[in-house]
Length: 180
Length: 341
View 1 (cartoon, one colour):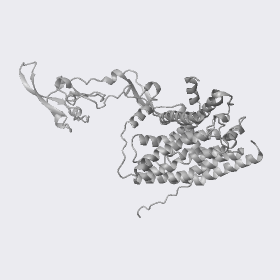
View 2 (tube, chains in turn purple, red; view 1 turned 90 degrees about the horizontal axis):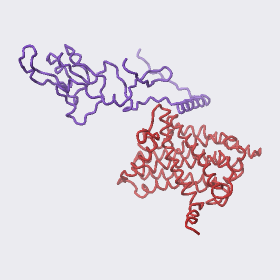
View 3 (tube, chains in turn red, orange; view 1 turned 180 degrees about the vertical axis):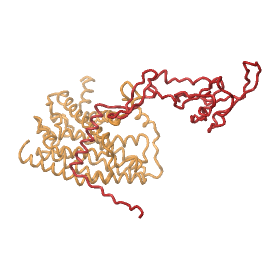
View 4 (tube, rainbow over the protein chains, first blue to last red; view 1 turned 45 degrees about the horizontal axis):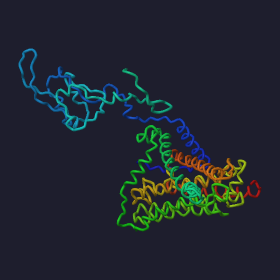
């Protein structure tokens, strides 16, 4: 037998329960009016301290890179590209052309596939993503720029906070003290 | 007679003082403050911050000024399909008519400071108050737009339901005292015999009626954004839209003045003396403070309540509020019979 539609009946509320509901609503309103528990993040002055493992900007450790090109091959947005640069081997002293990865943040979707696929862990994430560039050219990195994390101005100007779930108050903003 | 004396005489000439200062400037300032207060209150109750970044030191107090400047520099677009004369004149007339009832309210009991001394001032004020919504319907009709017409019709429904309630409940104040002269009504309330305490039913119905009739934010049924774009004001832009929005708040301010005179004792903790300052300035300040506190309570309710549907609001009006208003009227009759005042 197929499921049958159920006709739901909403019972009309009595005058007393209506009155009680209004009083309750106004009481809650008055409580919050005199004791506001605000959870707004005043962004440039405060910022959310993100945990390690957050997929932010990507940084290359050049010494670990074996020039395999897996990162560029797996990149779904074609943000990671390989560029050909001369490289002098410190042991033999011979100079050869090698392929080095660079990233274009105009295209990057911060999926982190390149970091996951890297066989020597030469790429890593930094736990922030709020950096503003003035031009589109500045969002493209060369090999030198790719080895340094982008400058994070929010950290210098703002207070790190974190949202914690409280049983009574709901979301509560807590200041993060130092490194954990 | 020196120039200063002539200037003082012009400033303190009752009709000018009452119409320009008490009727226009003070309500406008109060409305600007109330708009800021309403946004901040809603933000506090809803765990937000509200306007802040325009002027962080005074908690975003200049936000409304910034909005006003933006409105006044916006282009006023008049569509080709509208009825031009009615489209332009309707909001202006509505604005003027929404301030006009102040002329009938005596702010003191000294007859030399009345603009128009009359014996039926409460009835005159109520009659003048009910004029302005007609022009909102005219504005909606002249816009020649389906949203405007729906908004106008909603306005018409709400007026018929709620202004009747307001008139019945405020008139019951006059019934209890036995006079429709506001001065007599205020005098009868001396010694904390406030009509709001002695007849709380009428005060409550008048309060809810004002809240819904002025289509303030919890009950903005005529111009609800989600269903009809902006109700009767869909085709308006720039300063005309600002005038339309401000007219509702000015009307609410005038209603608050009427309520504070009829139910909260007007200038009562203070007894007017002789001269301009003691006889006119301080009583009017007392009334304005009472009206502002009423406005603040109205604004606070915005944060608590969700919006009613039109049928729910009319249901509330005809099934609950109108019988309650009738009961309040009966209570006033009983008090008049027992001779409490």
